Image (cartoon, rainbow, N blue to C red; front, side, top):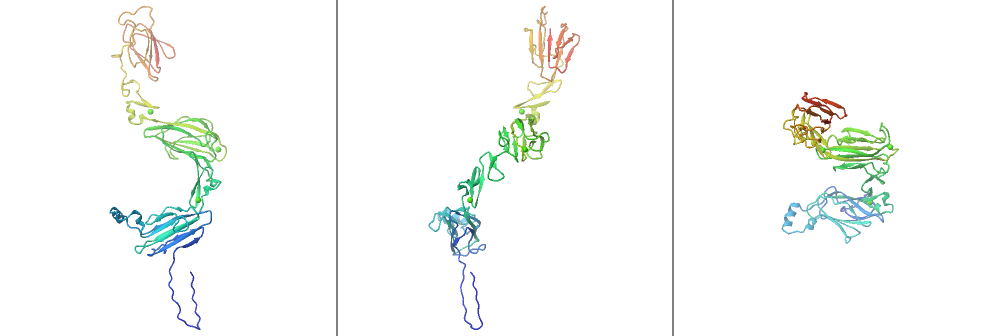
Length: 447
Ligand SMILES: [Ca+2]
Ligand SMILES: [Ca+2]
Ligand SMILES: [Ca+2]
């Protein structure tokens, strides 16, 4: 309001006195603006009542978002106490100062909310193009009040073009957003959806593929998969199909595999082209796979399986006395040369220099295949005379990498021919006490 007073010199009168007062509320016909409690941001006055009627353009709704909200409310402590005595009802909590909002043009329109206290109300949207608001303060304590922005709001997603969104449209107050179905993500235009990629994988095994698989991957994609297994587990990645643009240089499209989760973790390899990478096993219990495509030339991409195996050897050497060898689903202990595995499968004992206390391999059958770690072989009828015109064979097999030691203790053996793994005959005489064949794992003795 603008008031101007002028006086001329020819006439002098008594003048005037007027009382002014800011009147709150009113009818507002605008598509956007701000509503504040009287005197905001200073404290509102007692005994105020303001009513606003907001109208925006037809075919729109009214949106309202609060920037500040602080209206006197009975303190929680006294409220709780009085409430427990049953003296006041819960809704009486806003009996002193409050803001009432209704969906329509007047005090009889449907109630949206009755607000007081110190928590900002949620965003509000009317169902038509009008909103009715009333602020009331009582005669006692005052606070800073509230400030809220109103604006015209429309549901862009209700339009025939679905807001221009390829898959999903999510209306928001004053705007809207496009969203995608599971397995897809928003493209650079924020409207289209393209196959999603990457993510955190915590299952023990699974499959990863380039986006869009089995079709060609899209250009300008960057996917990061982080595979995490429990402690003591190792993750292996095996490619079933591999076809990426590029050759050895891998400067266009590529996939990078690292032990660890960050982009500077230990690199196992950077791959492109059509050569399927070897199986890669992580150093520890996590693995990072990053795929990148540039803006031209796309190929079919890759399909890879990952599986996690517990590395029993990573803790206390798997309980093995000598060597622990991790296998998928299990592990085995091995002993160094000159030692054999104890029956408990973990400890190692010295390979007995003599065939004492060893298992006697029977003689009833003259043809035998022997797999036990040690034993005695004897001629038929031992220690009695062996029969004439008798041919006996013993095939002794040891674990690959181990050797077979044949000791001759008894002078009754006249001649033994041994065949090594190459089938070559070797002479075996009774006066030599030990006969050691190194680096073969199968020998045949012919009696
Ligand atoms: Ca909207
Ligand atoms: Ca490319
Ligand atoms: Ca294992």
